[in-house]
Length: 415
Ligand SMILES: Cc1cc2nc3c(=O)[nH]c(=O)nc-3n(C[C@H](O)[C@H](O)[C@H](O)COP(=O)(O)OP(=O)(O)OC[C@H]3O[C@@H](n4cnc5c(N)ncnc54)[C@H](O)[C@@H]3O)c2cc1C
Image (cartoon, rainbow, N blue to C red; front, side):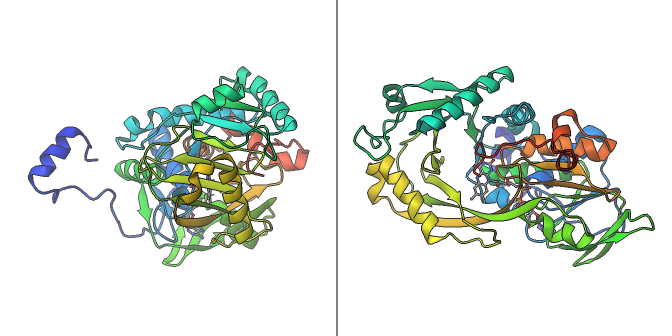
């Protein structure tokens, strides 16, 4: 892999930047691999990388129906945090945040990770009680929450001038989650892809998986793709909101439903907000990108769907909520809006698991799965390599729906 550094930048500047190597190869599609990963999003690419790095498994193909990193990994609002409620969840997300911290150096790719913290603006007492409960549990697992009074909250976010005592829902407190941050979303996909490719993993874009080949015991023996059949005994499905599109055809009933989540950005402005601001009582959040755009997210679209546009009602509710808190943003122009399809399990926790079909693994239910990419990839690679779960994902197996050992995170994620 060509190393990126100040020297390589200077050297390539001398030749007009014409001699940079391609970031990854485009090899011909092979007939057989040890592992096939469906989906070149964050989770698929990270899994491929850790299979090679940690387990020396390199005869791996990542098959992507579109272009690499064109799914939700490029559509999210880049918040990375570990403020969950359950003993099963918090250590997983703490691990993921800690992996993010060193990832730019490890992948030799600038992910622009900025651990700038997230501040919840709290407007109701039940919410305050709920977050304080999370704070106590997070303390046990090395993640932190800190209560802020209203004056301190306004000092930390000077642009937060709404939500005064006479407003509909006055602000009553803030909660600062210091571990939280942001990273450049495309770079996460590109960084993992480049490092996986350098270790021999093959990345195949425009290669849609359309079905599966099965043996006499029902085990996986290959995948059917838009470019022909590929043989393998291990397949990992990492397709974000489209998991059931593939698994329903296998007769595998997964407790997942797909929803549309949207976001939008403003025109770039001078530095205004240097933390991620989350307003859980109004269902919206925002942060400022390095380019100066305000990145704004709202609640989920009502109803199950695969649409990618934004629903008028969700857009209006989000804008109204943001302006109630930040009235100075009234004249800001909005530049772009988009949506993505996510699937969520009934307990709002992810599924990283073997299935009843030998050789088939699933990584799904990633509602807030950008933050989970490093730990999700690390643990799925462990599961595939050893056919046994990594301790961090043991609670997230499909067995929990049989034994009713749910990891209830409803309310701490967006749903
Ligand atoms: C608007 C929005 C805001 C979000 N904000 C946040 C946030 O702030 N923080 C956070 O942690 N998370 C956030 N998320 C969630 C996060 O983006 C996803 O949970 C995460 O990216 C999902 O994992 P992935 O990156 O592997 O998915 P994707 O990038 O979607 O990867 C899946 C890939 O599979 C491919 N695929 C699908 N079907 C097939 C097939 N049959 N054959 C081959 N390839 C296939 C797709 O083309 C896609 O590239 C947000 C999501 C959205 C939509």
